Each structure stands twice: as structure tokens, then as C-alpha cells.
Amino acid sequence: MLRFFLGTILFVLLIMVVGSVVLDEFPGLQPLFEELKMHVVNLYNISLVKYGTITTLLLIVAIFILVGSSKRI
Image (cartoon, rainbow, N blue to C red):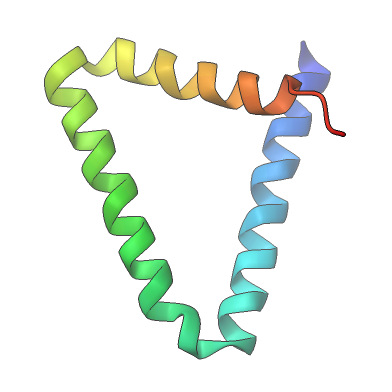
């Protein structure tokens, strides 16, 4: 269990570092990133209104588990 959480934290940090480098190297991607962020926040807010806080957090965790446990070809 601890290994799973540590792996998740390291994966998030890796995404943050890679995202920072990509946005620094390709500044033309900034508007695309802002639009993606806007859509994610909008989906999160809609989910909060429709399902509530606890269910929304459980849905996010479930999505991470599904993506993390999927078999790669």
C-alpha cells in the first residue's frame, strides 16, 4: 500500500516536471494547456454539484486506479 502511494506521488511529481519543461520549451502550447485546465476544472465543478465531495474524490481515485492498473500492449 505504501509502495502504491509513493509511486503515485512520484508519478505526479514526474508529470509536473515534464509539464514544466514542455511548457518552457514550447510556449505555443500554453493556450492549449490553459484550455485543457479549464475543461478539467469545469468537469470537477460539475461533478461536485451533481455527486458531492466524497463521491467526486472517490471517482477521481477510481479513475487513477483504472488507468494505473490497465494492461499496456
